Length: 408
Ligand SMILES: Nc1ncnc2c1ncn2[C@@H]1O[C@H](COP(=O)(O)OP(=O)(O)OP(=O)(O)O)[C@@H](O)[C@H]1O
Ligand SMILES: [Mg+2]
Image (cartoon, rainbow, N blue to C red; front, side, top):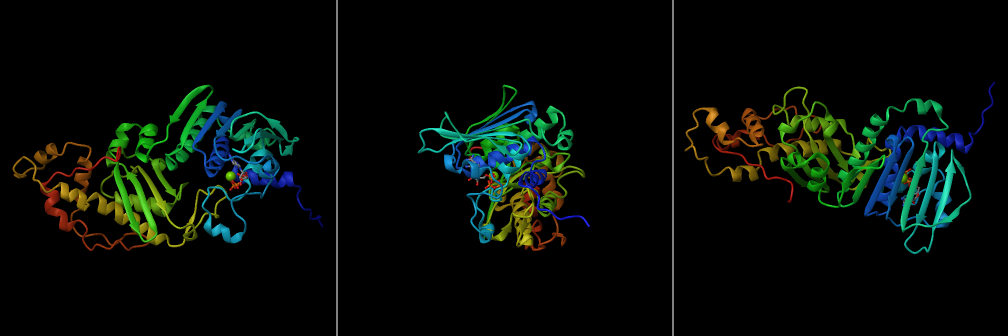
């Protein structure tokens, strides 16, 4: 009969790292999340060789006291929750107390920190999970974490690393997600001595423009709706900016990028008829709700969450987008008939008059005229019995203009 043994901590940490640290991009995500949780106003990410050789994240957050450094790198050690009840009021991005220990188990990590009140920084180096003695160091207030030779002691995982270019693609995407969720924070990303992103603090629209270009940002349709304690804000793109996959569907929950099939479905439904098959809408949507209404502790990387009332969120998203596409705002702008004298006997004339980024939307709205479908998905509670029918006249005769997001 085989003997049962408790695993030593370094093996436990390596197993934990397997769940959370898949590639360099995961390290960047975890380190930047720590910087954001520490109230950083500026976060600089520097990488070499797609992050395989080096990842350095420097922030100006509140730092870690020298006497707490070892604990910060230990597993299941966190300043963010105290007990199990806190799991239902998590207001920070981290809470598992595992990320640093996991990264340190599979790399050569140096953690240097100097809180505002300290005269000197302190530095701790951990190589493959083994900590060197704590040492004093120079450096500004805040925290700098350097991770070198990722997976140097886990050859199997190392084999799964892809080319520098592929890893860099994942890493850039990880930074973009964090930067979109926190536009008020200054981010930079450099690779091999080249500055890839310099994102000064701004509003959501400016951040989108800086990452994806002014053309996309200017065509965005702002979204803002409140239902009790559920707040949905952000923007969705004009259908002309659709993509062949859903990778540009940026959904954030309480400042955290998430993937949620149900909400992606709601988005697809809202754009139904507006996009060709195989095309996906682009969105940058932020959901805010009390932490007690969502379980973020269902996925090691917290990418997936479980909503207490998913149907309600589905309905709010779908309802808000549909209403927005044909909203009172739009209708109000449509009160003045277009200058053709209203003699719209052919669509061509009207199409010429609506030659703007909103044309596709107008086309879609026209197609949608008529009774609402009953297949509104899981929540099924999109209330209006005929959301498009009553708008028919206005839509057929008048131009629809959408206000840009940027600068609002
Ligand atoms: N950049 C930083 N600035 C200030 N404190 C930090 C920073 N990075 C880590 N810490 C401290 O170290 C602790 C451990 O970090 P670690 O990332 O391992 O766990 P966590 O963030 O608490 O939870 P999770 O494993 O979910 O990320 C944090 O709780 C925090 O107190
Ligand atoms: Mg963390």
